[in-house]
Picture (cartoon, rainbow, N blue to C red):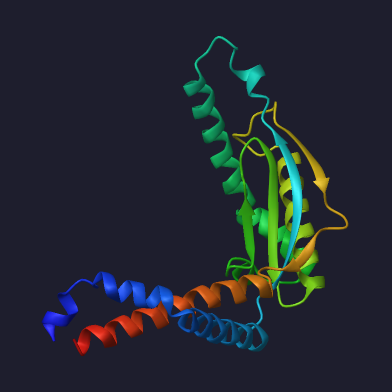
Length: 204
């Protein structure tokens, strides 16, 4: 048992697998079929995206002659503060007031914050139906802006925030059927190849 498990695949083993096009096609078809069934039985949620433009005006805080490291450190520190506000109880309570979903459910993976930095912040929301995803993303982005407009302590007065997209939000499946099929095909090919190699080694 140990001998065939530890022996590396021979050159001929790999050549036979590469020449066996039926293995590749069969594995891809089986993997794609399984992935399609999974997609239909347990489809991914809908995802909506709202965008807020965040400008920290670092050039007004730190003179041009200062090092890039100092600017980066400042932006990172201020961005961390804003991320905390985005996930704070105060912000999520605003979302709860608009959507009726309790904070505990909002924190269970429904909300995602993408690309938090100096620029466009994407507020993503997942839900079983597109209407709920749309409402969540819009409410979360609006709550974030509203919380910052209330001038919370510790936030720079030079911070500027503007909506770039709060209406007509892009809403679609979090993952497409094509991604499922492609991933399933690759996985099917890989598993079938490994299975055949193991069988070959075992009987060698």
